[in-house]
Image 1 (spheres, rainbow, N blue to C red):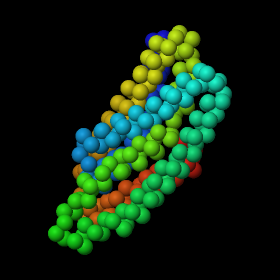
Image 2 (tube, helix red, strand yellow; image 1 turned 120 degrees about the horizontal axis):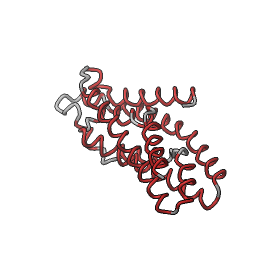
Image 3 (cartoon, rainbow, N blue to C red; image 1 turned 45 degrees about the vertical axis):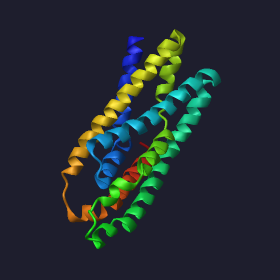
Length: 210
C-alpha cells in the first residue's frame, strides 16, 4: 500500500511537468496582470477539476470495467489538446482586438481591463482542464480497490496532492520569470502573445503526441 501511494505521488508529479499543465497559467497570469496568489488559486482550481474527473473515471472503472473506462478516458485526453488550442486561438484573436484599447486611450491604465473579466478566464480554464483527465491514475485505483475504499481514497488523495503541488510550484516559478519581462509590445499585445504561446504549445504537443 505504501508503494502504491508513493507511485501515485510520483505519477502525479511527473505527468504535471508536461507544459500544458502549467504554461497556460503562467502565460495568462502575465498577460492578465494576475498576482502570484491569483495565479496559484486559479491553478489549484483547474488542477482540482483535472484530478477530480480523473478520479471519477477511476472509480467508474471499478463498476463498469477498466478497459471501457480507460479507452474512454484516453479518447477524451487525446482530444482535449485541441480544445486548448481552440481556447488559445480565441484568446489570441480577442487579444489583438482588445489590447490596443489600452494604448489608444492613454488615460486608462495599460492593464486596467485585466481585473474586470469577472473570472471568465479562470472558469474557462477550469472547464478545459476538467475535460482533460489523466488515465494513468485509473490502474492504480483498480489495484488499491483490492484493499478497500480507504486504500482507494488514499491513492486519490496522494495523486491529487502531488499534482496540485507540482502545478503550483511550476506556475509560481514561471509566473515570477514572466513578470520580470518588460517590453512595450508585451504591454500592448500581452493577451494576444499569451494566446499565441498556448496555440504553439498545443500544436507542438499534438504533432508529437505528448
